[in-house]
Length: 238
Image: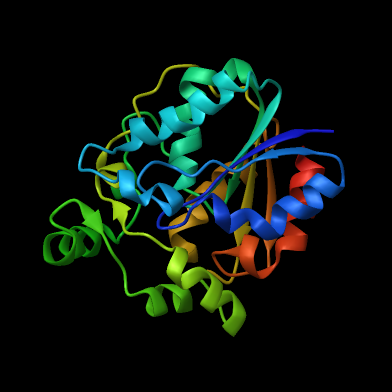
């Protein structure tokens, strides 16, 4: 059995993994779903100082205080940058990194270096987020993430939170050599911004010695829309 730490992406919280945690735990796996500072049930802690390092610390603190080892750490979307930065300082506690339609920054790269949405997010922060939070039109966001089921939309809408802007802007600092750490990329083919994540899937395909690549016929939030497939793939990769 494996120990999973599932790290959510932007605007989400640990709650978003609910449909995935149940089958994993039923199968006997240990599962943790931390909510990053300033989001979800921790939205009241949002402040301008929250950056990529702060979110990575959320994750490494969980690993340390729970004394977790041989961990399969999963990051969705923006959470890919978070788990990479966490791995830079806690690789000795990890068995594998799994990127679920996620960003995989190199040392010195920020998420803004890897997406065409930087200008839009900064404008949202200036106009609607006091210069440091990125709110979204939730209905438009749910459309873009492929959330079509009315019950899922009703469940998600009140749980989404504005995203601290600095997490996008701060570059990965680096640390441990992660080149030999086994990693997996789960690529969602129906994501409207699939081209943004294609380079990471291509990198995985080009490095079969340390990477595995899986394609999902799903939109960008597969832990909501096809949770059974996600749980099955995670169990396989674990």
